[in-house]
Length: 269
Image (cartoon, rainbow, N blue to C red):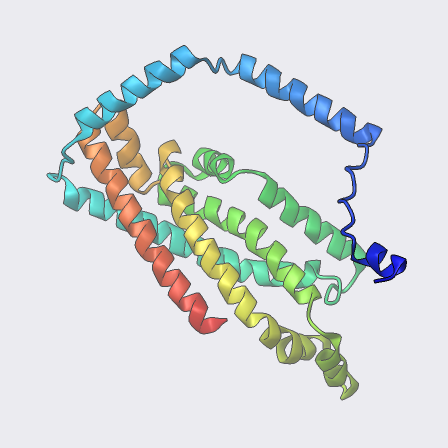
């Protein structure tokens, strides 16, 4: 074997890690400083964690066995939560479609409209659903309507973003071919763009329902209707048996809907 062949067959050592840049060092130092300050500010101590573990065991002991006396009331509240999620997501998805076409680069009628629509979508997505619930509880009062409106705003912020990104990924060929025949903008959108994005939009809509179902549970904690109201009342009254029953009902319903949603997505996509 020649000298050159031996050199070619000799394994080369792995490259050394590059020296981090000054910016990376600053980021790491700032992160470690914030982490240390955060641990101190939140008072995370071993004594409190140990005490919390003892209290958790006490909570579980007082919550078992679950109280099934009010199962009809809990079932009705869970059904109301499901109604809030379905109505809110349906309205939110319907509103997300025009928002998405106005925000997509290849379908927006003007760049200023696209920028303004993206800003609105980002604003709706940035504000948490609990904050939206508090706003609508203050404006329309306690009850399911506040929860529905909060989920509508949260769904538009979530779904419209993914809808617009999928619209921008559409291959321009079919749209250009349809436009060359003299079709108008709406005809191009309905005949070329929408059919190609429909499967992705359906999957995103199903994810929105799963997300809204979890959100609807927590929205009830601030008075926006649903089973969260029952859970909040049970916890405040130290009725841990009923609280555990509510938690188990929520868990079963969420798991069932996740499996149903996954089955629908497998058939659609």
